[in-house]
Image 1: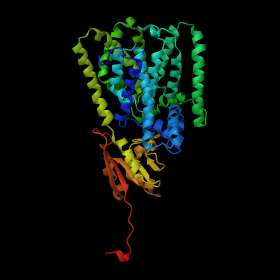
Image 2: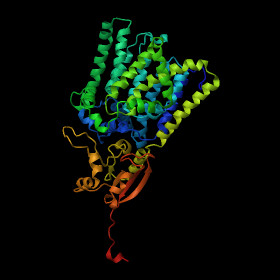
Image 3: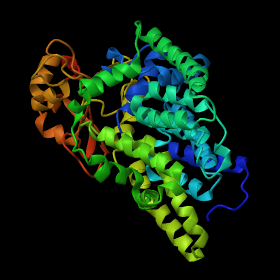
Image 4: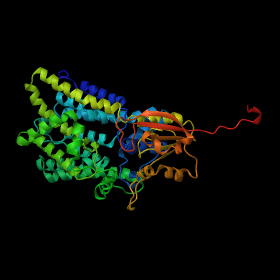
Length: 506
């Protein structure tokens, strides 16, 4: 294989950390709004006392757990006077990369130190793309990987897993409060643990599950209650709005098979082949690999449950990545022991290239303009009297976490029209009639100093832009879709020049 035999733990950790930190600086593209609006923007408002919160933070859907961790970093920067915009942007990502490093090393230990496992987790394009992002799903995935590495599997091939270990329960509770989407995985593992425990089931419930759940759950409810100013149980609020009220479907609907036909193949990339290979082997001989059968069942149940929810996204299956790559390496390792050297190199090369191409494109090219525009806006907003209007689909860029100036901003909102049947959110109303929106918005106050929009909108707002000059045109994507264009345009207001005195007129 690629790595030499007999690697010491410090060598493995150092190599993983190098790759994860590298991803922070190489992945410079926009992915989804939650990377900023559910973490960095919240922490920025906590510490610097200016910023914006989305509607989820009014309804108690999100936990303050991870934003509070970022807020600690921001507080240190603020107290030391080192809160430069670059530090505000990069330090949380570096922190996330370190957590992902812990997760990767835990995954490596979980497999018994198999080099193929290390190879798969380090070359996975989607994990490279997301491991350094401040996404809640990234942290959730890291917690899943760490918890699985200490979970007491009773039928594993390695004796390391045969001892009882309840530390995974703490991680499970934290993960559910952080992002409840991994709850089906924990439900399966909990039932399995109770059925296979070496001790009394009642004893396990009373001495482990109950006290850990009460202590961790109460602490997290207390944290959220403090910040919200009322008693809030965020996993319940999340379930209520996204499942019972089906608010998520307001932001898009997908067919039931989307995760099988598009979601998982995209996330896994070339690793889809060994994962399918492993799944077939487990289905054929489940008794020979009971741990694999358990993990495959947990992943299948997770996918089945979320296939019933109409709104789907690639990142929602990210927590399954450690499980699926574990299955993949468990299929590759026996084959590699019998394979010829040239076969090993061919397979490894195909995996590297197959992952490197999407990682390079999506990490460095696709949807880059939304981030590249932020330092330009920061420079153009030279005074605190400057103002910026983002005439883009809601949350198309970060905001104060990247501008880091207390200036006036206006962006299009997309809060669901609660209890208002037939109404739509502001972003959609704007694109239906941008001129009317502009007149209503700025009829009684000054128009913004800077206007940011995608080039697809330009032809519809020429009257608005008549008092502006084009300042920047930044490439964004080669695949424009809907109201997201190929380029991000920045317009600056043309200030009227005072007339010279009469005796100076030529």
